Length: 101
Image (cartoon, rainbow, N blue to C red):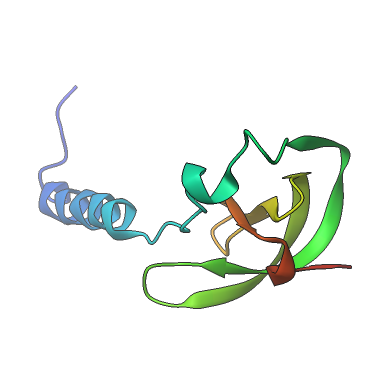
């Protein structure tokens, strides 16, 4: 079966655009291992995720997100949320940046 050459260029450009969007899609910035200091701040895993609203850091700007707390230490919380595309993100943030819903 042959290819439809009429649309080949259209689909090639569309695929290139999708690849570019994936490569430049911003990713949240999580706290570093030094900031978490797990040796002195043990991690507790949530038995059930807790609904939260939190500030997530991105390279360009902070964003207020609604999601779930899935783990925490005395000073930090690991949060999980979905963006408008339905993609799931996870990041560690300072506990003060998180509010329970």
